[in-house]
Length: 253
Image 1: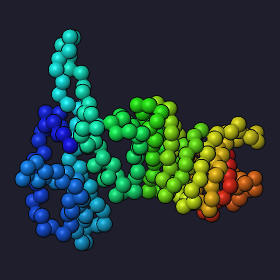
Image 2: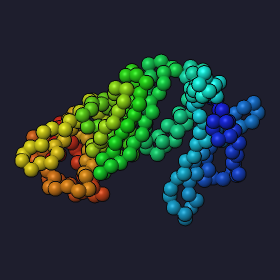
Image 3: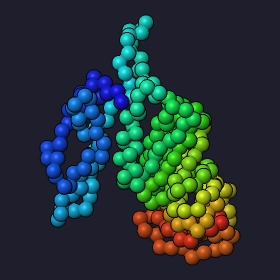
Image 4: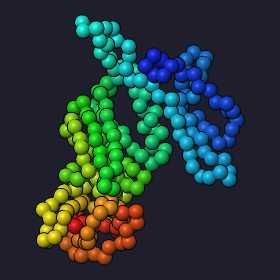
């Protein structure tokens, strides 16, 4: 891995105060000759002080210093992926320990990875991403389940949803899915019907799945169809409904 101190808030100089502390674990470290420094650290709350965890990663810029161009400006020069490890892999590892997977796959080493963000609006999760090309596969998993994006399809394997997008993504998510069976999940927004329905979403491809539906905080009456049959609605907690044992397709209006 290459760490440019001038672009990464200085050199990697952090040290553990107490290596024998049972509440602190070094998950990854870096070495330079005989020197070793922690790069990813997990800290759990001591007994009697809660049950939370703190995970920290040092972080390194993915860019190298560059000479001035003809306009007197420095153009960012990203590292060649075939020559250096991607420092963002450490952050991906940290997120996985918390139940989040925002990884991506490329057809060859050195392909520029995905730039991704996620935020919440009106209780929906919004996924935004930029991909260098359409050969990059994006994998998503959240603690509450796999996000099923509106107007998208994904393949399910080992509890992770894999998508193949265009080069830009701006997608809404109102379904989170837990499913062990492999398969393909699809989500579409349909024309609102019957009269008085504000929105109608359909998700299909479920096999004995647990589906969490993220409801808008301001809404009218909600109804659900499971494979064409009306079903009783579970209680909504924090603007979310959890349906269990779902197979086939689920419509929410």
